[in-house]
Image (cartoon, rainbow, N blue to C red; front, side, top):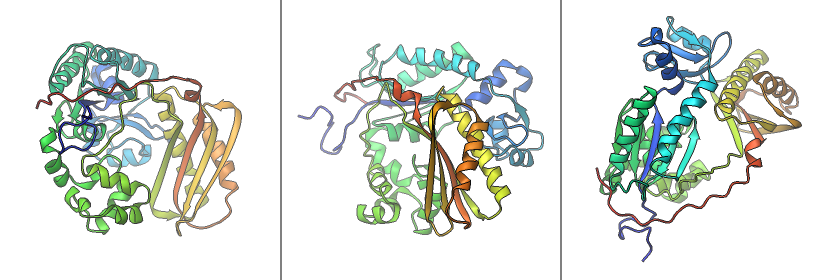
Length: 371
């Protein structure tokens, strides 16, 4: 018998996966370290012509979000307090949090400083309940750092990721195997991990609002409408996601891009958007201590034609100013002067590729999944 299969109702690998996500991590660290900021609307990053790296929950109530231009954030929340980021401090706390994870399992896949997947199908403490492990981890994080975390628990990474967002902040959600079908059928499509705002709007236009609507579409229809992502949507709405927790995941590229509600015509607008993208890209790279040698500009025009152009340097790019300067050079190489629908910047040839790490994902049978 295949050890992955619990029974014939689940024709896919079933594990005990926890997704732990810190609550408004950067902002919460700043509020914890500076009590004068507690209960106030704050944004980490931003400042003059910058972008927001993180927003406190008090700021989010006004619509302030990460990657938002600081000017827009201030318009939405006039009393917003901007705080400069302190990445060494965030990394210090992140290390403490990961040490807690490793008390339970070595199968930890960090996604960033503030979130990770854990495979606890078998764990160092012999605890049967994944739900109990998540509770213990969240309590230990709070005891040792003063910060709160949320968690999602289910049979695969996709479901755990979706679940972790349901009872935020400072909560957790378990999606039991026999509840998966009903849960996904009633889940709004914009809540599916991997469905962004643009894709969600396209789904709405096609009459797809919940998982049950998505489930009615054939894999051929979804592939025709959404390209290679169509097969992903077809599978995850059925709870099928076979990606394993990879303890030494090597990232090959980091990208940021924006689709605009109104097409860009003016070069000053383009330069402003490139500046925002450069700031956001730099924030993401700093977050994970990543450098890269190849910068790529992506342009999608109003007629959906696509243009990309790259520059590779011998030394690593290391600042938002470098991304912006190079991005402008790549913009000058564009073949068309047409309205722009989307801009993106990505960095590849990363220093992560120098780490030749090999990980072995354990093949562990499913035992008992407890609420």
